[in-house]
Image: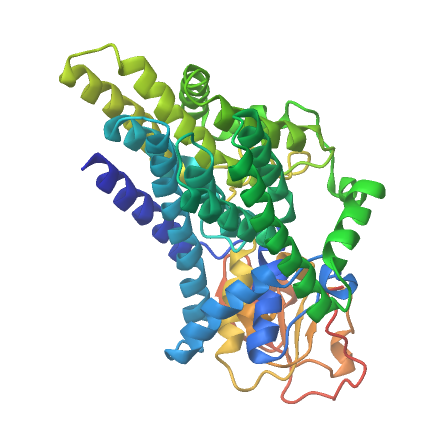
Length: 468
């Protein structure tokens, strides 16, 4: 009963924010997933550098395109509809991760009650809720990670469980390359447990998924493991990601405390109590955390795949704490107290600032983390419903911080602030501030408006679909 209530409440939190937030945490949630998926389904969209150079594979855009295509098949061709469908899909993946956390804790012997309380620390906590609806590779891969480890990692698992778990981890790597850390961790734990046959079979399954990874790149980019090679060259050899900021080793711990202090403290204490009963799971989780903390460039979203593992460990730790208490009432109160800590965090999720989630800390840490650029995206949705738009210029923000054609959904030129001037005749509408609005104001949202500049546009044969 507790697990069912936790999952229902977690779903309610996530779907609420999926339907009431049009903002961005970071451009990747559009230009590495939504926009390339829009290109696959509808034939047009802005192209980020990763999909020019081939630094990402097509697994995540393919997944999003599948959801988008299904919505289209069922009649959801308007962006306001298919975007809500995609966001709710990712939100429900987060609920699945909470269940996976419960399943993983149970696999390590935690009681149903303790495992449900541990799952609440993921289902109801503010930071997982914040990231849940976003079309990020971390969200897409977290579910196969936690379910894969729940099947393959604990002692006593069947041969079928190990093979199925390794298969899920291979899928997780296809969606996000960094999840290879979990694959290495699984093999190391199996070898440490002297499960030689299981380790060999898991390695064979992972090798099969590696072949599929390479084949996908061969079919889409023209070379085996092309995206992995370009990505590693850019991020490891050239340290290119550092251009977007660096942070010290303590970044992740500090930001987790900023975003959900009580949940982080409770989870941390309970994880330590799980060390004796789940050393393998703790080692794999700590390895993933430490390797990310050692990288110069850090973003809190990078930890999303490991958070369900830590809450599963918290469930095991809570069970270890309560195992000596014979009074059922005491166990129930303790589990409800942990759940209440998580629920209070979730109720306060709307107060999260960018400082709380470790983003834009040097420029606007006190700004709300919710609905950033949402006003611009709502005006793009308004433009998508008009049949007189033949070109649009966004004058208030770089296009990377907008929803692009995923929101505009019209095959017309979309120009950045430094694009052609108004007198060029290349666009009919602008998104701008009211004081600079020309002609007729058609819609407004917050401090920006959509205005019509003219009827008709001069064709732009030199228009490029590359994201500036």
